[in-house]
Length: 270
Image (cartoon, rainbow, N blue to C red):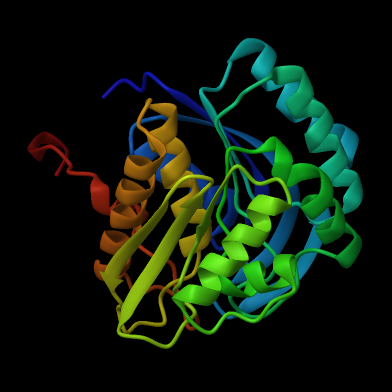
């Protein structure tokens, strides 16, 4: 396989490999595009939680984005962990210079173990400045509740929250329904014209670390290949569900999903 399309990932590093930029690279690569990165933070973490977070200087983040894209122009961009106002401002400035339209924002706020990954002033700038610059925002239910200051208990609440985000300037919103207590997960895509509900069986497993990072990267990869938004979301959700269903069991806590589930190894490499 020779990758034809290129994806730039702007996100934090996860030393345990299950989430963050490591999950993003695995996802983009396994789905056939070429992955580039701009690292926003370095975390020491494992499946049981986050031990520490070290911020990267916003100027260095800006340089990673711009210098990389001067040589290799991305077809799409995925944005993950942006933990401070300075980082978000640097990313916005870089996006103005490189002018890519297919941008997916995963508003990472809390790690699976409960550690807070973004401060309140950064959330404000994300809401008022960044979401207008992206093509799609993919919050889970707790993130959507923070961004919209509403409580989400069902699919109607999810649609209501998505519409609030549209009013804040988002072009398209995919709210992930995995946090609701239900045997069926409903992920809801809301645009200014349509509402699309993706329904899938919920897997009873603790090994779901990095699902949000993985989904946004999968959608970005399919967008980079020229697929439409609905199809990109459908295929991205399918990829994540199959990666969860593969039932990889690594670590003592919330283990990672199987990003390599989409790859078939040829016999000569076995």
